[in-house]
Image 1 (cartoon, rainbow, N blue to C red):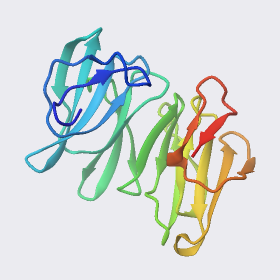
Image 2: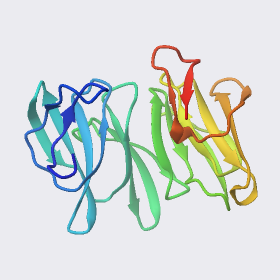
Image 3: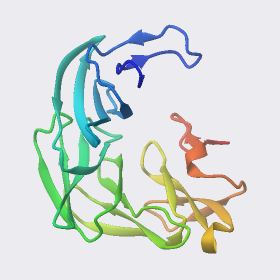
Image 4: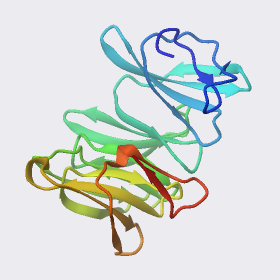
Length: 221
């Protein structure tokens, strides 16, 4: 809750709300949870700057908490393990790192050719790198293997590109537009196979969710 600066868990109906953090953090912007739900990466504003910290939970108690480096540009959590991936910007050059949620076991992955990649980590062997969406410029989607550091181009020259990965990271939903955003098309693509299937709805990936137990099922608004 932004007003009180605490984290809660509740049923989807909103009932049985329980506070799970005992640290007050004003102006929370977003919270990202690791798969075990024992670590949270919190982004918040302080003194006009976006800052980040991690919190480690056990039950309803905060076991540990600390600030993450101020020069982190983009950060996200792995969907496969309790790990984080982030970029650090220095002299207009972005560097990609992985680490434990408490920023230990830091591993340098690569220097990136584009400074403003949006990050995702849908599978243990694939970190997603997507250029920011624009109806006026073409975007690319890459994956990089954190072990081999191999960079693979997945999608190229897509205007208005946006992506929603399936829970197991094997495929993804993506949207693209025509010139200046005049036409939206939605498709599903396989990461390992060159198969693209058109989805017969006009929507955006932000309005869709993959069913957690059925990897071929989508719910869209």
